[in-house]
Structures are given as C-alpha cells and as structure tokens.
Image (cartoon, rainbow, N blue to C red; front, side, top):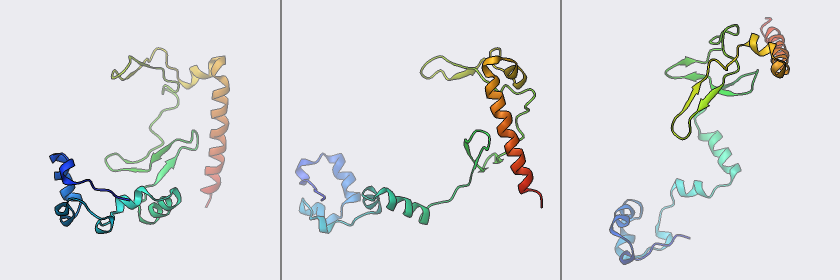
Length: 154
C-alpha cells in the first residue's frame, strides 16, 4: 500500500522530486489515494518473484554471448565492441608467466606483478609443490584437444 504524507510534512526538495513521480492532482489534495497512482514497471519489478524475473528477462532482455574457457571455466564476453572477438592465442605458453605473484599495498594502491617470483610453465613443472597442478592442466588440455578434433572432423 502506498502512503503519501501531507505536503506540510515534506521538505521542499522531496516535494520537487514528487512532482515528477506523483500525479499533480494528488499533490494538490495534500494526500493521495493509492488508486489515483499509476503503477510503474519499476514498482512491479520490485515485487516480482525470482522466477517471474527470470521469465521476463529471458523474454525481453538483451542477449549477450559468453565464451567459457574449457580449461578453467571462467566466462568472457565473446564479442567486445572496442576489442573485437575473444582470442585464445594471446598467451605464449612457453614464455608467459603462468603463475603470477601480484603484490598489493592496501586500499587504493592496486596490485603490481612481481616478475621475479612469478613462474613460467617450465618453472612451474619443475617445482614439486606445483607438479600436480601442471598435470591437471595437461590432462584437461588433452581432453579439450580430443573434443575439438572430434567436433571439427567434417
């Protein structure tokens, strides 16, 4: 139920905002019956169930295609307007720092890459504490390669 207080109780700034939201005949009366107010889409959306919201968004929303990395599961927008289509050949697996150590200095300072402590694939595989991780990446990459070969055989 909507309740509008009398004009005498409202500060001037709020009255100016209400003039754009509440029909003028309600402002002149000092109070307004809920039946006099038009119900906006925003009000209706505030009270819709999660399932109603899902159905509405799937029906009326703007579709955006995401690509999920088959190796790690992270999602990226497939087409970025300024950068073009997502590319998978940007990282050289022989020279790239696969394990990156980033150091932060607290609130507002950001993070900085510590290249001396970061590791390439070769360095990562030679360390016993990371060997299981490299094996998991190898096995997942082999599965990805097998599936990619199968679906492009035509």
